Length: 236
Image (cartoon, rainbow, N blue to C red):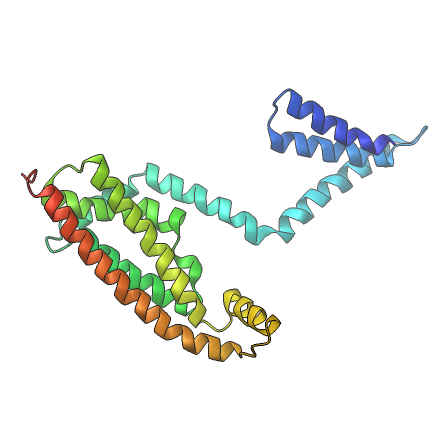
């Protein structure tokens, strides 16, 4: 029954609003030590139990290192932003006279969709690319033409930047035959009595990807027209 002390540690930690990570680690250590404790147990055995519990933490981290590395990437992105990544991106785009928000997002849409077709879905993303780079660059392209952006137009540009990433990867990844979404489609169709090979699903995803690119290209063209109508009166 002593191993249930770990639950008491969790409850106490949440009651006092301690750091959840520290609470879970303390509960795990408590449970590991309680499992090894018996009346008259030697200190060496208790020390060995503590080391074994810590080793299990290390093994769990090593087994899930591909998941944990995401947090390291986010920390790196935060440091780059603090070091002026967004400002440099704005300066570069501001010097390109032909750049508009729609044109820049259209280029990113093509890159995102092509890389997703090759299975490289991790090359973009909202946290990795859109927030630190794509959205600030699109805003800078508009500001270079029309000056400071009102909040309404700024959020409009940001929403289109986020949409471009989602649309590019969503309609591009199904072209890659080894993508989990293709296997999900195959399993769903097979469960409903419709046989379909992954290669056939991948091949028929190509017209859908082309249609998505064409439709969203028109939307980005309309974005430029909408921004021009809304901001040309305030342009310097």
